[in-house]
Length: 229
Image 1: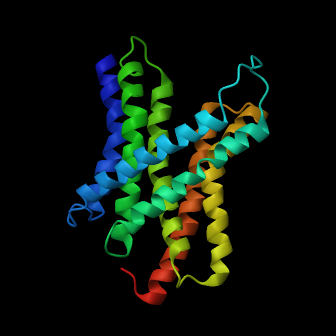
Image 2: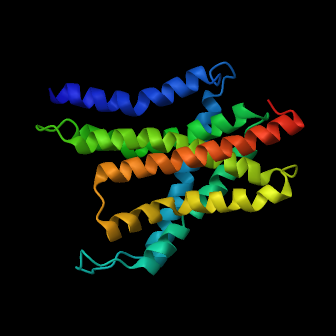
């Protein structure tokens, strides 16, 4: 039973990534190696973030579980802006244009995150003696992360375009900042409202969907105006 639960969680996490890679056309472009390179830059970026956090934001020994240092957590969340720089490096290293470039960077970045943050968690936890909804939640959260990362990559690509309508640049920049600070916002929401995990998952899904649809509309408008395919 535990092995069956582990297999279900594993499929729920990784199958959407495989389907995205296969049916988005990336397999036809031979983009596997570029996805792997994107994953390598992801790992390097996370190591840099860990070094900065360990140097400037050491773990505190505060025992108050109901207290939250909002300023400290905000400054820690600011370190996530390095992810945008890493994504920009990934995009600059992928030849071509259009959706293939964005999807290659997005799937590679998201895939590296999901391998490093979910596999060991599921292997240790989902194979436990008792069923726990936590791992189903984590698996569903991984699918939301895939959409979120592709959205973020698209926003970084739009922000780097010189032919983007100048009136849309503040919108794209604001959405990029929101993507970076979204984990902090969600953590603050949970702390203040004591929201349950399923409600948090629903809110995260709705926010990600709204960001994705808005980003898609901006991308589609730019692609139509300059003929990007």
